[in-house]
Amino acid sequence: MKSIHVGNLIKLRLSQLGMTKAEFARRINKSPQNIHDLLTRESVDTNLLITIGEVLNYNFFKAFIDYKQVDKELKSKNIYLEK
Image (tube, rainbow, N blue to C red; front, top):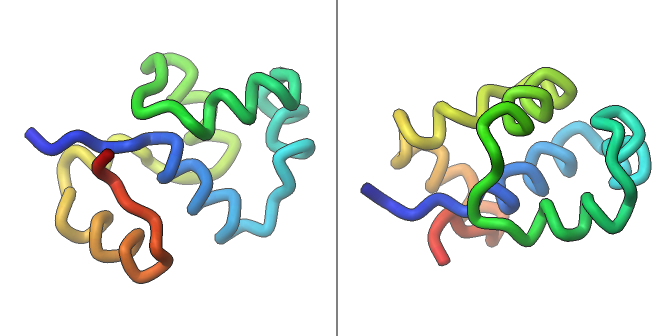
């Protein structure tokens, strides 16, 4: 299985929505420092990822199912799923 960098996926979705990191932090009840750390992580706790998906209206788990499509989308924005 491919190694997917979930933090990069979250960055992309924030960008697509035009949501600031501060607003995102407020909506998931985390500090700005936690958000910085979150966006650099390759993996995220499943429950937290579900919450993030609800807030950002995006199914992050689809990256594991439809890897090629998500990878193509990210590469077009110079963001990479893999390390």
